[in-house]
Image (cartoon, rainbow, N blue to C red; front, side, top):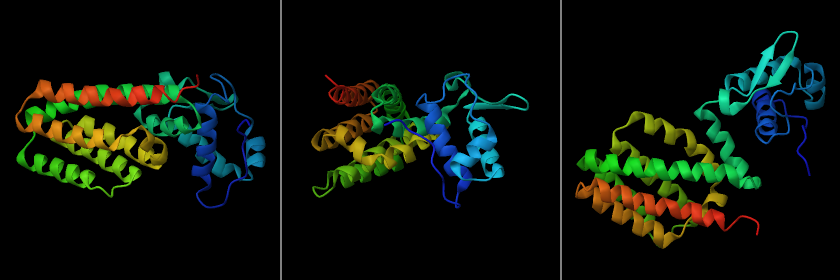
Length: 237
């Protein structure tokens, strides 16, 4: 059933409007270059006032999704040309509705990112960083950890690894995806094999302890490639 606009509640009105319109744009319901319905029509459909609608449209313009021009209305932009890294956190939840191509791209980036972060961590990690990595690995190794909690801990392991890399831009990138990944925890937890995750943590810590950057990069690369393989098994036959 195609997605449509629906009336929104009074609290957080502008954010809810932006969420609905953003999803419709990212899924192609509104095509690149297409003009959104006139403000008065959108406001009526959503059951909101035009001030809240304009605030929402400004949010979309800030994300690089639309361009607002007086006399021309609001047109959809090619977000691959105008958007920024913030859009990743909005694209990830779309994978749950069957858009596996988006998640394939995310996992490909994750593999490259994780490999290079592991390499840098092996070169730069302090004793405090190693303590934190071991703490997270120990928590993940507990037998009673549920799949979604293991997902959270695995993500925290890579947050700690990123901190050990000493690269602040990498840190901002992983922060960008954190909330989106954890909000979709039931879906992403399907990609994890608990024993494999725990073994990976231990092997990677050992490589970092011995300052073997090449081994750390190889361990991360091989492990993270598994997520792409598992995802491929979800695709329709």
